[in-house]
Every structure is written in C-alpha cells, then in structure tokens.
Image (cartoon, rainbow over the protein chains, first blue to last red):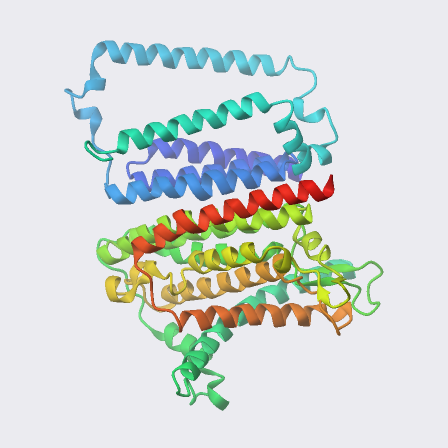
Length: 177
Length: 341
C-alpha cells in the first residue's frame, strides 16, 4: 500500500511539474520545474528496483545538463519569454507551418494511444524477466549494454559526437582557425 | 520499536550532530591556522584560547537584520541557501565512518556506522554534491545584482568542468575495488603489503588521489579556486546580497561539503577506518584522524596559495586535469584487466 501511494505521489509531481515547465513565463522557473520533474522520475526508477538508473538520471540530467541550461538562461538573463503569440509576423505563424504542426500533434496523439493500448497486450514486462536484484545491479546492466545492446549504445554515442562537432562548427566564428 | 532501530536512529542523529559541529569547528580551525601561519594568535578572547568563537559568530549572525534587495526574486532568494545546505547534509548520508560493530555485545547482529549503506553509494554522493551547485547559481541569479550574477555564472561553469575530472578519478578506484559501495571499497583496503605498508589505494592511485584533491578544492569553491566569491573582483560573489541566517547557511554548506569531500577521500584512498595499532572497534578514531589531516591540508592550501585567474582555472581543468584523469582511468582499467585475467 505505501508503495502505491508513493507511486501516485511521484507520478503526480512528475506530471504537474512537466506541465508547469511549459506553463511558466519565466524561463528560470521552467528550468527548475524540469529539474523537479527529473527528481520525481528518479524516485520512480528507485521504485522499479533500478537504483543505478535513478542515480544516473540525477547525475546526468539534473546535475550536468540542467546546469548548462541554467547557465544559458542566466547568460541571456531574459526575465520573460518573448510574447511570440502576439507577433503576427513571426516566421512560425505562417498558416502552412501551423497546419503542419497540427498534423504532427495529431500523429503524436495517435501514436501514444496506440502504444498505451498495446502495453496491456504484453504478457511479461521486460523488467520482470530476471531476478530484480540482479537486473538492477551495475554489473548486469553494463554487461547487457555492451553485448546485447552494443549497436544501439555505439550508435547513440556517435550521434552525440556528431551533434557536438556540429555545435563546434556552428559556434566557430568566420575567419577563426 | 526494537533496540536495533533505536540505535540506527541514534547513529543518524549523531552523524547530523557531528556535521554541524564540524562546520563550527572548521570556522575556528580556519582562523586559528591562518593566525598561526601569519604569526599572530587568531581569535583569543571568547572562551579559553578563543574556543567559543564559533558560538559568538553564530549568535552575531542570528541577531543581524535579514535584508532582501529590491527586485530580487522572492522565492528563489529564500530557496537558494536552503538548497545549498540540504544538498550538503544529504551528500554525507552514504558515507560510512566506522567498521561494523555490536556496541560491545549490546546487539546480536553488528550494525554499520553510517547513515545508509546502499550498493551505489559512491554515485549517490556524487549526484547529491552535483545538486549543491544549484544553491549557488540560484543565489547568484535571484539577488538581482551584477556581482552575484557573475559569481553564479562562474560557479556553474567551474563546477561542471571539475566534476568531470572528479568523477573520472573516482572511477579508477571503483575499478580497483570492483564495487560501488563505499563500505566494500574500504574493506578491500584492509591488510598490508610486505607487513608494514598499508594496502591503501593512495599507493596504487597516487595520480588519481592528486586529481581528486585538486578537483575537490574546485568543487567546494575553496581558495585558490574560490572564483564564485573572488573578493577583489566580485565583492563577495554569489552571496553579496545575503545577510543574517541566510548568509550563514552558505559558509556552513561549504564547510560541510569540505568534510564530505575529505571523508570520501579517506574512504576511497586512505583506507577509511583501517589502520595499525587500534583494534577494529575503535577504527572510527583512525577515520577522524585522517579526515582531520585532509581538512588541515585544505586550510593550509588556502592560506598558502594566491588565487588563480579565472581563464587559467578553465584552461587547467580542461587541458591538463581532465586528460590526466582519463589517462589514469584507461591505464588503471588495462592493468586491472591484465592482472585479473
């Protein structure tokens, strides 16, 4: 019973703070709400017997990536987001682009509904196949990551490397060597 | 409500109490050692040899008026110091500080000295110390002051940069011990080589230990890397606009972070509570002595070295310290693989 209560509490916090990320006018508060949301997610991972994933979530997302977000927001020091919705000349306000956006949103809703309906059809959840104690351990996780899922792992690292090289190229000023 | 549960509670309370005492004692130690190094007495009037000076300092800060600058963000201005000190206290939760004990036969099964013992302990400490940066960054931003903002910006960039070297140095020790639990790391350092050299990881990882200590100084924002509050450029940096208790929480968080950093260094590199002469039940005395020695080195460095320049700090962090840490990790991994195969 307490587990269920904690689960509902954490998911409530995660959903509420995620909604507030978009709802806030002040970008500083948006960043903080996102951190709170990551914290709640980490709590959910602990409930799933995956302490390593929970801690990795905190270290990487809340501890490193969001600090950089905060750094950028502070550097720009914008007290409020630009009121883009009142700006009729904004390039994203063209009718064609907006219709495309609506189409994408519709697709996302259909995908989500399909995925949620399909969840009930899976007999055994992936996490319940092995001993939860062994599954949560770092040793097992590392072994699986570098054997069964090595392609996905390496593909992701190359993707991140490409993004990093792209950022460096874009940030380089004209004439710099 | 059995005895074991009560003793666990007592250990948690005692750890908390000792951390508060550590921060107060470090304020005094800092001023006394500085006085000694500058050939003067330091605080001497309150209590015998100035021993009660921290108490006087705290009372003075409690009596001060709490100010909040016009245009400061009300919520974040209040939240920032609380966040700082909470992260500092929480980070100590997975640091074990003594061998398992039955309290001289009081309990049937031995209980471990330390708040919590979990199998990813090292990572939890790392995650919580990385949360500490938010306190400083938010303090800098919410104060609505240029000096504070500069301090906050510097803190975020500096801590992100040095966290990398810090974690990489730490990973090498974890490879040697083969476990992420701090208690297991400590217990793998029991015993001696050739009968007299203790099996501490500092002898296997001298480079890692130096990297850990340098990155630790930068992580806790101590001189010579105290750029978030560099006095001659930024008045007092991120805490310029703070006063009274809210101000007091920042140095307290800094001193607790120093204690945590030293305790983790003791557990990872200096064999924790293992040491010659004393029986294992009194291992916590060794632990205290080692932590004290590292803390003394911290203060010693602060009053010996002048402050760096900010760009030098970033250059050093990214171009020297981090590559050195990575090479150290790769070499350690190769050697562990070679000797274990």
